[in-house]
Image (cartoon, rainbow, N blue to C red; front, side, top):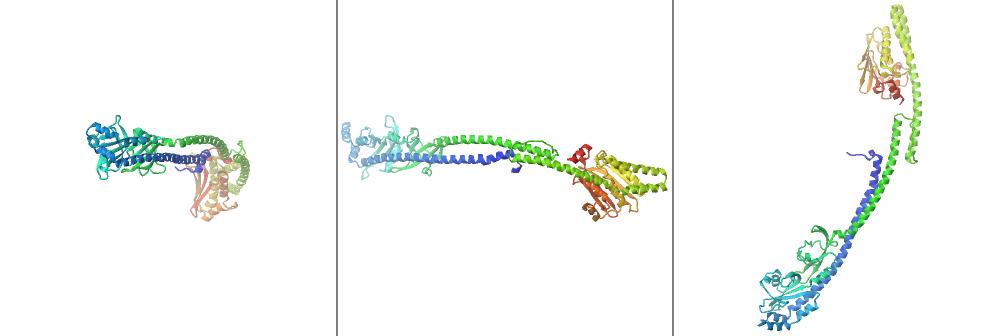
Length: 584
C-alpha cells in the first residue's frame, strides 16, 4: 500500500532523509570507485603482461629463426645427403664417414642455448644410430609428425614430439622437415628439438602460467610443465583484446592475455598466452575497496548514531508538543509544560503556551456572552400567555363551578413556580414533560377543541435538557396553528432516539405555513416577529449544543406543521457531563 511521505513520522523521515542524502551517494561513490580501480588494475596488469609477452615473443622468434636457418643449411648440405644415402659395408666404414662430418656437432655447439638435439631419420638400413642419425622404425612411421613431414614434402612444420629414443623420453617443441634436394629426392626427415630449458627460461620471466599454443589450442611449451601437451580453450577472437578476456579454467577465474606469434613454416599460427588469476589482478582494488568500505562503514555508523540521537531528541520534543496541543484541544488550557531550546520547536512551544492562554480568555468571555444572551432570550418568553390564562380563569369563574377554577389556578401556579426556579439550568426530560402537560391542560380549558398526545419511544425520561425547549414550540402550534382552525385540533409530541441524536417532534393539524414563512423564521435576524418562540428556542440550542443542532420545520398550508427539535444524545446523559460538555 502506497504511503505518502507527509504521513510518515518525523523520526522515520529523518532516517529516510539521511539514507537518501548520505548512504545512497556514498554507496554509489564506492561502487564507481571500485569499478574505476578494477578497470585501472586490468589496464595496469594488461600493460605489464603484454610487455613481458612481447619480450618473450621476440626471444622465441629469435630462437626459432636460428633453428630455421640451420634447417635450411642442412637442406642443401650435399655432404649430409651423401652421408645419409651411402650404403655402408661395415661399422668401421660408417664410423670413419661419420667422423669426417662435423657440421651438425658444430651447430649444436654454436646454438646450444637454442637447440637440445638435431635428429635425422633415414630409411637407409646400413647407417648406424649415433644420437644424430636414426633408422626409421615401424613405430616412427606411424607417428603423425613423421607422416606429416613426408606429406609436406620439404615444408617446415612445428610439432610437439615425444622422443622415445632417449633414455629418459620427453616432449620437445621441435622443427620437423623432410630433407630433399632440388631434384625432389628425399634423404631423411629432420627433427630439431628446441632447448626446453631455454624456452622455460624465456617463459619464466612471466609471473604467471604462460604457454606457447597452436591455433587449435594445443600447448607446445610452457613455464608450467603440467600444461605441456594439454588443450586450452583459446578464444582467438578475444585473445587480441587490449585488456584480454575473462575465463573460468579448472574452477578458477582467470584473465587471459595473448599475443600472436607467427613462425616460419606450414603451421605458422601460434599464440603466446598468459593466464593471470583474477584475484591477483584485483588484490589491490579489493584491498583498497575493503579499506574504503571500512572507512565508509565507520562514517555511516557514526552518522547513523548522531542522526538517531538528533532525530530522537527532535521527535521527543515534537511528541511532547503534540501531547500538549492534544490536551489543549480537549479543553485543558491551564496545562503547564516546558520544552527546552530556543530553536523553531522551542519558539513554537512558547507560541502554543500563549495561544492556550488566549483561548482560555476568549472562552471565558464567550461563556459570559452566552450566559448574558441566554438570560435575554429566556426573559423574552411571551408574557401574553400569562395574561390570556388569567383572562380564562376570570371567564371560568363566571361560567363554571369552583373546582375547575381551582384546578386551572393550581396548574398556573405550577408553571409560574417552575419558571422562577429553573433559571436556565438543565432539567430532566421528565420534568420538562410534566410542565408541558400542565401547560396543555390549561390550554385545553381555554380551547375545548384542542387535544394532545405525548409518545415516548424509549426509556429516555432521565436525560437532561435545557428547560422550556418544548413549551415555546407547543405554544406556537396552538396560537398560530390551531386557534384559527374551526375543527378540532390535535397536538402530537413524539420523543425518540435516532442514531446519536434525540428528536423531539411537535406536530399539529393546524392551518400550516407557507415555504416563505418557514424561510423567514430561519433567515431573519429580527426576534420581534410573531414566531419569536421558535426563533428563541433555535438560538438557545445552537448556543449550548453547537451549530449542527437546532430545529427542523415541515409544514403545508391547510394541513398542519411538524417541528423537530434535534439535540445531541451523548450530551444529555447526565447533568455533570452535560455541563462539562457545554463548558468545553
